[in-house]
Length: 89
Image 1 (tube, one colour):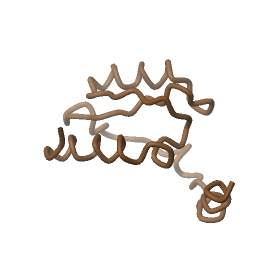
Image 2 (cartoon, one colour):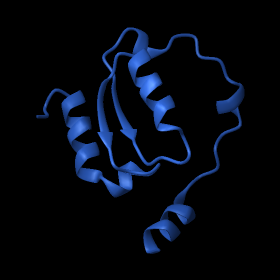
Image 3 (cartoon, one colour):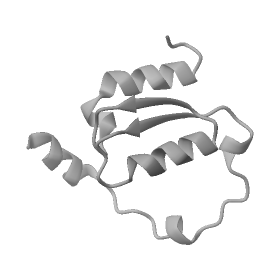
Image 4 (cartoon, one colour):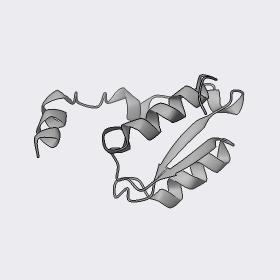
């Protein structure tokens, strides 16, 4: 798959500090949040995604998508971003 090859070639390694760093203040505690749940995700459990979205009281959409919903459902993700920016549907 050509898309998979491009994504693999362009992806940067995850910074190790991501796993050991501490967050002092989670923005979702005081700011509106939006979340796209990927129902077919095999990397992060959709039930965990729903739990996280509910915990942050996020405006949520559910997509029939795997982990890379930004690639497979670009219009739905764009609509979610526009809604978050106050310019969406």
